[in-house]
Length: 125
Image 1 (tube, helix red, strand yellow):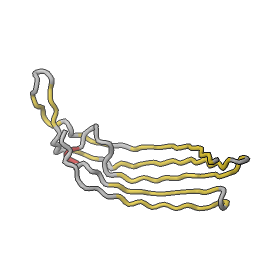
Image 2 (cartoon, one colour):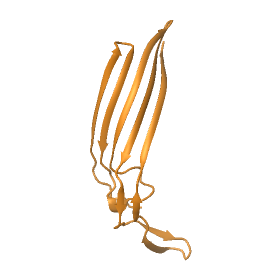
Image 3 (cartoon, helix red, strand yellow):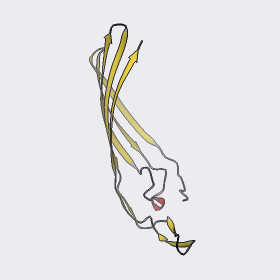
């Protein structure tokens, strides 16, 4: 499917606060991104449209004998812009009869939200 990709941009901001210097850190952030796919080319296979998100995290560092360890936990929630597509340029192909082109199949309302959880353990010998 032709996507007619367009240029995108994003803004990101974040902060870190040392609750216990060199041991415990809190993090927070926000970002905004535009979509690479024009609204009239949106369909169910589009990874995401215009969106913004909030993020939060915590990191704990400690020593266990000769090993330096760090545990990270993070969460992000993306808020996607609702798209109401009424002028879709995305068409489908019907298999029977073979090759027949259908009407626009991308029209509709697209809504989404994404939640991401992360937990890691880092070891340094």
